[in-house]
Image (cartoon, rainbow, N blue to C red; front, side, top):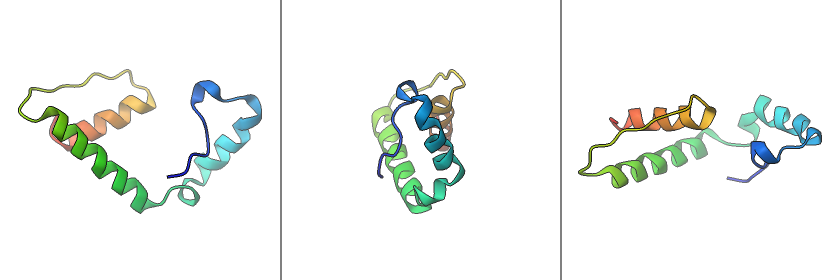
Length: 77
């Protein structure tokens, strides 16, 4: 997966236009197959790290936490 944008904290006003270009045309930058492949990698890593353990997660409600919540729920956490 190629990196187009930096972190939110490093975003400058001049990159905001590029940010919205990527958001509005995300399928031009990341294929569904890439997303599914990385999702499966993340699920596998979560399962490996939590194997034979009681696991939970907490979240702030931000976009990263929403993704983590969805991944954890999809593997039964």
